[in-house]
Image 1: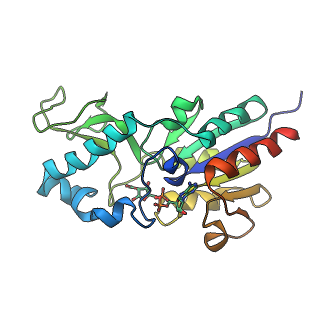
Image 2: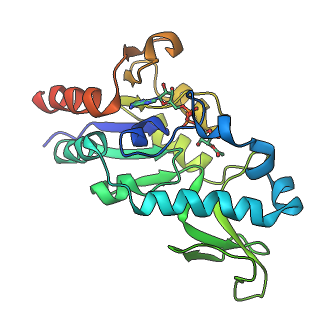
Image 3: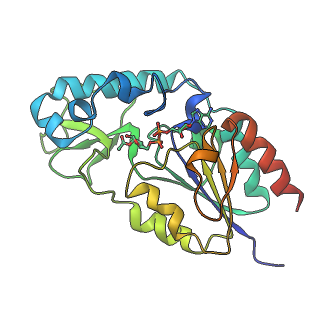
Length: 229
Ligand code: OAD
């Protein structure tokens, strides 16, 4: 039997938009209503922990009421024919709930909390995170997310997975945030590349086939095509 082809899927907030979760940079996106420097940096956390916790508590509550959409579900189908690795910038768990088996979260996970003393002490967390919730060392727990100005611990693992991709799918991301966005540059030159995003035409990069559609429509269509081969 031939070795299965490998598909690397790189996703951003746009894939979860049709599940009711806001993106960051679209009109009425999260960064229009909150300032990054108030809620998503280590300095914000030092200055006002309650404000930061409130921001992520609201995100977590919304996530627990959201469901995977047609795009998350279609990606699971690909596993019948291909080796599939999902690299997501999203902190939601909608890929996992849809059934995807290999998901790398570059920017952390909303349903986890971690020690502010030891980043390896990570706990499942599904309720509001409050001042006074502590890790086993006694330090305040923080959201298990990567903030602006922090390193992206999973970056090397994600790059390694991308280097031998036969096909790259980029879905619902503005490709504005580095280092995450650099993932697309690590796919082999001859890999087939697709970019599904309503703004794919304007954001498009070299060698990619831009599909300017919402994920809920564009992803199931492309998956159908990829399953025909
Ligand atoms: P952005 O908000 O920057 O971009 C969202 C993308 O989704 C845009 O290109 C939209 O055109 C697209 N979009 C909107 N609706 C869509 C739909 N229904 N289907 C498909 N695409 C749609 O979000 P990201 O690129 O994910 O990081 O942002 C990257 C990082 O910036 C995030 O992980 C987060 C943020 O600040 C941190 O918080 C560290």
